[in-house]
Image (cartoon, rainbow, N blue to C red; front, side, top):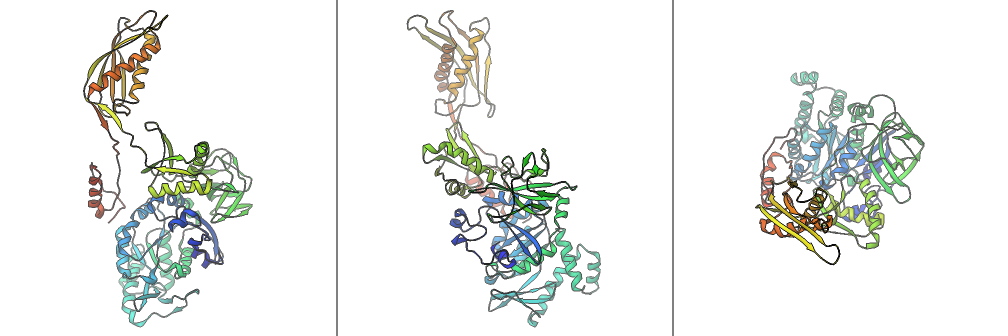
Length: 592
């Protein structure tokens, strides 16, 4: 994103992630890892048109950031490296774009040091794409180094120049055959969506350049093809060409709004990201889909306290914003990421980005016990910024558990708590929440009797304890007849039983047990609720060890989505963790 902003004039000097002076990725968490860890938003102007870029992390552990951002995008630019072995990693992204029906470009970065033939890379990308991958640029090599490209639509050569725009020239004569084949392959893919173009190709007639650009624009906007452009963003090579392609071939905001089901002229927006800033408070980044948004308006029953254009976390205040713009809204405390905002009190119902279920967890506690109250407030803000995190108390182990998409995801969250909210915490491996079950049935008698002067304590119970099928839980059955235990004391017996089941003979909660209370005795003076509760607990403490108790470890049901060629590796991975494959289903839109 830094290079897009520099070329477009959004910044006058490129920053460096290591120095922490980039528009995006300037946080300590991003610098320490040399990668994006959250979506970064920046607005700029190129050739008199406004662009807002949503720069998303590439790691699968932060894919939820991309999911939220894509809900507000007109198109996507998938950045990849010129290595065929890495193409497969893009399959989940392509699938996500397919699900959203979002037009996309592929920008092959670092082409200045590419060793792989571009045709091999396009073939690898085509294997994982449900849409035809169309090469737009053929690289020019000099002494095995890529120094520019030939644009197949204009048939012009562009030699990369450090710090300057490339100038057009005629293509090298020695590449004539290669270029002719590549250009025909591009036109052939376009002709699948245009009968007139197909007829011209069948008659060996080349369409004029203006028609070719028209076909490319139409097919890209509709999402029928995936155009591939090349460059080296570090040196600004190919960045200007990418900006021009985005300017001409990205669908208009109104087209995207229509695809999402937005109609009418009333104000409607959707929140894509939430930030908590040190001085500006809460900022809700939202895409306006229809109408105009003015400072002071009431959205979803809450007043907008400031509208801002963003460049990273640098804000520029404005009084209003129009449909199509992405802006930050100040201090809307009850608004959350994914919410649809409409004028008035009632919220809208645009489709929400799916929040992934946690797959990794750690025990979290404040390093200083005096900060435990502060931890709760900081976590609430962190969960607002990243809804894919969860923070819950595990009763079985008495631990607070932070869960998310992977170890790095959680380490970033822990680091952010310290850097952003001034709270030092300790993240460690959580205890395994083992359970206990029993394997045989018994009958148990227990009597609690105590005489200490005056009224004593007396409770006598007969129970049957038996195992239940896995997942059934606890069942208590009252089979007292003839008043051997008065009705008012039976809930106390059950309470004592449940209390003991919280920590069984092996030290863990007991599950899938049925207890039948069928007989007992009471004393008219000495019996009480406390006495019968104690008797119920005694019956379990004496009886459960005789029931052949067994330790249960957690079993997770996991859905794994992989391309076909990765199925053997997935099988091996599951087996190595004592897992069992229960079945396979083919999934549309996932090739490979």
